[in-house]
Length: 218
Image 1 (tube, rainbow, N blue to C red):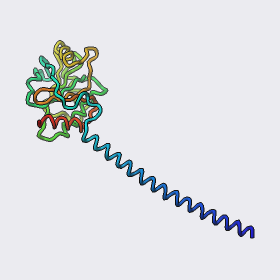
Image 2 (image 1 turned 30 degrees about the vertical axis):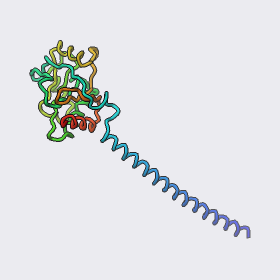
Image 3 (image 1 turned 135 degrees about the vertical axis):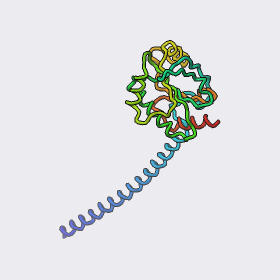
Image 4 (image 1 turned 180 degrees about the horizontal axis):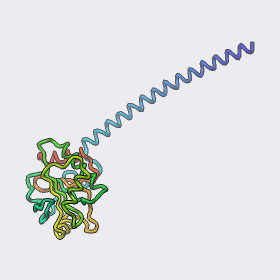
């Protein structure tokens, strides 16, 4: 009788263990389902925040009009004299970069390409880049483009290289310290010539596209 009772005990034990496993699995699936729903809702909320609201990296109040310092007396990679005042009526993207930079400058350069490609075809901002180091050349700019950009910027961009005295004045007027100049920020300037928002690299492309679209259609 004892062996039979032991066998029955083992059988009941196995059934009990099986029941516990089934309940555990069911509970686990239930918790997993709840976690999946919660994570999906959280992911959906996060995605909506990224696409609909400015990122926390925006400097200053988004799209607030700020007086634009002058930008004159500078010559681009083609030897053309460029003035910010000449671009009134267009959205201007302004960046301070070094063509010999190998850190954030290439990232910002590629992000600008992504912004241009994501914009509506009817919106074509003018891209101005101010060198943050003296004695840079058109060859340096050409090498930067060749090395770092698989897709070039839209035609009409200017990389302002000098003269050195004008560069230093520009750095001061735009709040760029002389040693070393602050780099890798993108200013969005509206068609009326006001700085509307400033983004640090790497860019939140959807934020920048949204800002450009808004200021170009006001």
